[in-house]
Image (cartoon, rainbow, N blue to C red; front, side):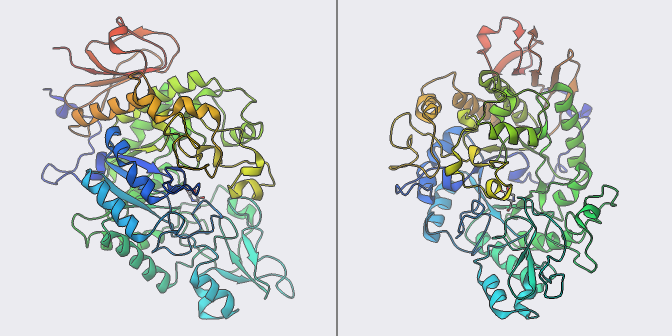
Length: 560
Ligand code: NOJ
């Protein structure tokens, strides 16, 4: 076919003798269980709902699903406040229904990844209740991060640290002690220096691996290990940007990798070895440690998700991440949307250059100031997705992006569930707008999500995005995703990528076998490079007429 392998600039393949692990180039579809499909009409998505929708995942062509938490939870943080890591929330299903779901997915050739939340439990966890009951100085309290408050009676917090969702990071328990919660007060942080905590998580990993789970997504993987020695630094000292790598009191400490080496030993007890992907919001050069084969194996790369739709930025991100992945002996990951960020159709429809704080202000305006150009957002989103799916490494898709869903930016304050809304003092509406239950059908009480209303209200415009409408339309976003995934499967022959010359604002790269991906990030048409267009994110191939329109991606096979 081609001599491409000889010229690869970014080799990241394992040696030829190593069988390719399934996850290296997988397309992983994120299911947010409470908002995917509701089988019993209680308004909450559930495991039988997921099982019933496996045909959708099959027709989409994904390799794996990642399930956000489905464990028992009071939902102080959408399920990331876990009461019991080895059970299913009764509102979502049972362990038997979990087994049925896994069996159905496996029978369809789809792997299963579950979310592990190791930084914190919920405040309803048995060990946290024991800690509260046992009182200061007890061994039960040592499993969490308790500290005596300042002031004569411990009436002041041990430090002025703030939580990620806003407000203080310490909560008093009424006896002079306070506990640390990096996130909501209902999410007390574990003490990872405690051997029982370490052991308990190994038990949890085996529990799910024994049930057939193929991999784990590790929540805030960079937060677990903390240096709580006295005196505690102030928030200002912690925020100083001159701290050397690994020296922050609780983010990205080097010792955290001991934890993951122990997890790796558990993963390797299984055949095939289980895998994991770290959610670690760390500097790019620190990410490889989480992704190393002795550690979790992969780490999310959120660089594209944080980038504007911009040729130079996309190219730089790809070059940097393929280099890093090759250096650490793994493959890269690519993400445009997940359950924590404004959906990328909306992001790309807003003016370039907006950051998270700008988007929070935009949400506060009900999504009107500035008004997004959603047609443009959808066009760019499809082009970016086709770009991403042409890359080597694994692609993470978030439920609903295959329907081209924009953010639901005008949710009424009364229905908001995200703790961010309350904890930010009502300045940040939070993440509910990307978690609205999916529209499966144009008609029906919750657009086919379930037999009753959904736990977050769906806007009437969801009807136009419904899966059943798009299923019949060869030009729909759903059809575009199916087509791209099918071509990706056919063309996937290796992990090499070579950039080729392209006009300003255009990125073009070649993959093994000689096929190329070209994205025009500008708004003007450019001449199409030679080759046979097999995939177009915009107008169908036979309508292109020698030109690549603006904000469009095409995949080309070599000309015969
Ligand atoms: C990251 C998760 O993606 C997010 O949804 C959650 O709120 C925090 N971790 C805390 O668990």
